[in-house]
View 1 (tube, helix red, strand yellow):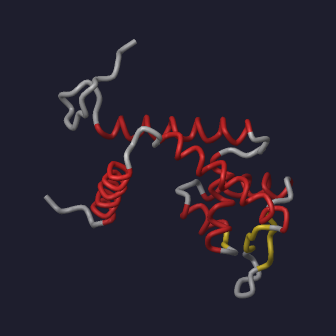
View 2: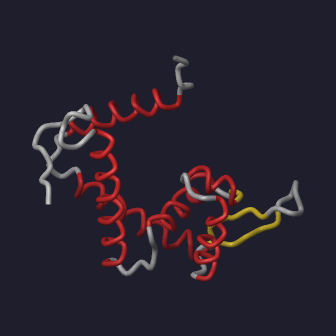
Length: 158
């Protein structure tokens, strides 16, 4: 098994690339969050957590909007919403503007559980950043925000 370099590589010449580091970071955070949710007795995976988070943050949304917001497959979103509905955390309401469409919102149980789930997720991120100073956290947030802004720009023609 290869070990990861202690330097922060940025090119393909390094042992591991920056995109690989970012991917490994995301994978590790997802695993940690799912572990912590399970330890707290929440029967939720990260995708379900993200749906609850977006509904708590933005209110009623369509399945298409939810899928786009969390970068999830639109077809698979129906199964995620079905599971959350079975657990009693969300409900579907007919759209007022399109009778074929449904809007999804947190149920009373979903709103009740959200605060505890949110605390668990905050604890997860805190555990990931435990060794970072406040300055380093701000720098990391700033650099990632700048990277996202760059990625949101149209791809330059060559």
